[in-house]
Amino acid sequence: MSGHDPDLKPDLKKDLDASLQARRELGADYEAELVDSFLEKVESKLDGAVERRLRRQAAERQMTAARGGGSGPGGEFGTFGERFGFASVTLVLAIPLSAIGVANAGLAGLLVTWAGIVGVNAVQVMRGFPWQRNQDRGGSEWD
Image (cartoon, rainbow, N blue to C red; front, top):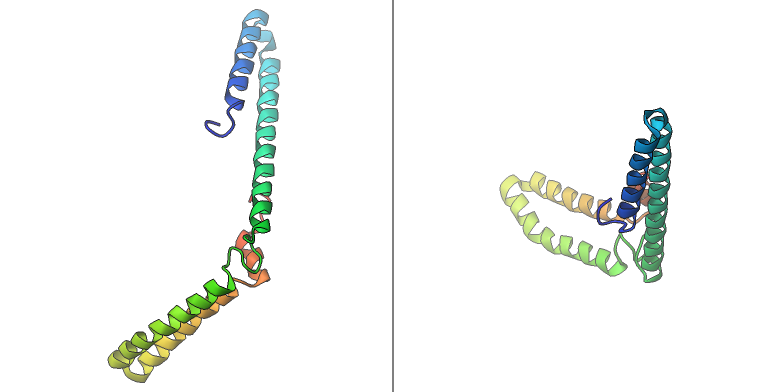
């Protein structure tokens, strides 16, 4: 609770104090009802805080998407330029890696090196496909 919703903590403290005062005045006979009442207030306040947080996160996602971020073509999986840059860097690094692979293991080393380069680039490309995005999110309603 601390730090997330400044109004939540003082309100709950007031409600708890009121419940304890009512318990002192009414006695132990009404304790269960007082506890239930307090827990309903806590649940209601938490529900409100969660709703506000979810609305804020949805608004932030909409703003990110409107600015060209998010999971669109230029979103969390990188722009075309970022993906092209990644592929270019791997190809530049392929030259010394190929030399090292050939020097240490001959043709087998060269094949393993290029299999790794192709694999890394394939994974990078697959991250941008829509079906992969849905799997990354897990599909949980708690996300």
